[in-house]
Image (cartoon, rainbow, N blue to C red):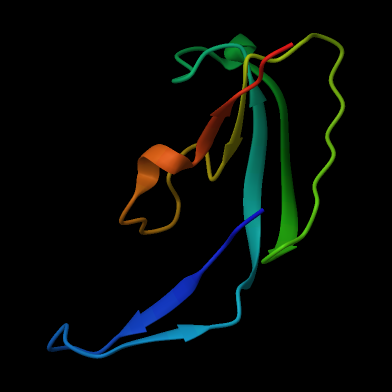
Length: 87
């Protein structure tokens, strides 16, 4: 996983990267945007670091894998949180 954490000052001008090590939800999904509980095949909360490899197992084949699937974190580019799984 490629993860970044940034702090921005109150003027919005100064950004600085800090090491990412946070508890994040990870999901295996039937749909890109789950609408009902059964669309979520697996949901776990793990402490993640940049560059870490993640392995999740579910009973059914998922269509998408998602980091922070319910947008708990502020994310400038949220469209890269989901990955379509090609079988």
